[in-house]
Image (cartoon, rainbow, N blue to C red; front, side, top):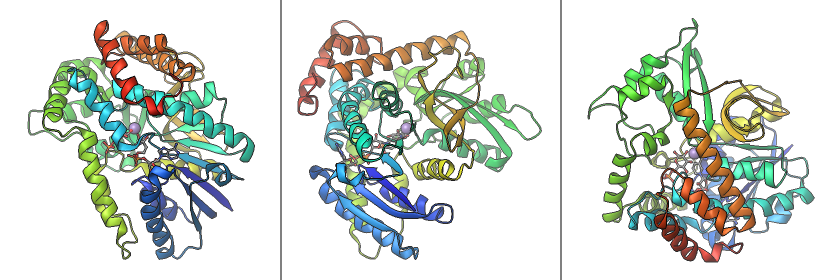
Length: 436
Ligand code: NAD
Ligand code: G6P
Ligand code: MN
């Protein structure tokens, strides 16, 4: 049977995972699920871990659910390792978001200044996890969900050499659901193709007759005024796009593109949240508290509806389906972070990209995309260069590279501002940045 180990098991998202495994119980002969956390997360681990045990029991399954702080031993003979940890927990995210905003620039915990700092804290840990995996489970697959998922996945594969890594995000799934809903058709009757990098990808859509529906969906979703449909993602403010620009793009943007195409409006909104003491991290802290209050209830043995308040909802469908598809060679088409291999001509051959792919027993086989139009190519090449520079800074503890990454990130102004914000963030997070 299967042994699945989850690093960061104390996350409030864990019930999503358990629900996803239970849904796939007939295709996944699980023996043991191990939830690993650290001392700082032990209380959360116990609460959500007991809840996971209740969920498994209520489903009539005999899977062993183990809670532990001992990562090295937990990894012994694992088949799949999933990662969903946050170095420094939500308090670190509060700093990631609030420090840049205090200087009037976007924090944003994946794409902005905050995301680069999150990468600096996270990449060394993924390296340590892989060191343990080399000894304890050399054939295991690493399914990375930890943000910034694209950079962490690229570091795992390229810097730390774990080829069997797949990165995941719930954003593509959310868009697929949203589009099918808008068109009032079944998702299975549409063909979607995504290409780009994590939190910076575009997509197109066709129907079963072979007709491309992208332009129609652009109009449906974005040709709107204030009463249009909401942003499909709970954590992203619903700024309007400039419809002419998206029509010119002729691809659907992902939710995170609002930070670029509608940068000023997003910044303005974030500054208002900052002033109100209600940045996303601060809101999520409250949501998390409420979720853990629910999880404490010994009668609760299913995933509560309230979890959809988190931006990462539906994550289980991605993580569990990837595992089921690898294990059973299902060849499910999914959007994952994996090695480019020429899929996107505009990016390095060995870069990690987020693309539609078939998930086979030997991993993700991406669908060819080709080239982007210059307007998109310019942005994505800059973003990939920024990501590579962040990874280098994180691995080497290289301050010059860090400054470089801050300077080229489109959400951070260069010059003294880049340096000031970087320095303040490095200082605030120094307990989690031994490499700097
Ligand atoms: P969280 O703050 O609840 O952290 C999850 C757990 O990780 C905590 O219990 C914490 O104690 C633990 N942890 C911290 N450092 C650890 C370490 N070194 N080893 C093991 N465990 C450690 O975070 P969350 O809000 O539940 O999010 C979890 C992670 O998943 C974050 O990195 C977040 O960005 C990511 N996420 C990704 C997506 C996606 O689309 N890929 C969606 C949602 C969340
Ligand atoms: C999703 C992203 C995740 C991100 C999450 C934040 O849209 O795909 O990568 O971690 O939102 O949600 P939260 O509830 O933590 O703000
Ligand atoms: Mn994501």
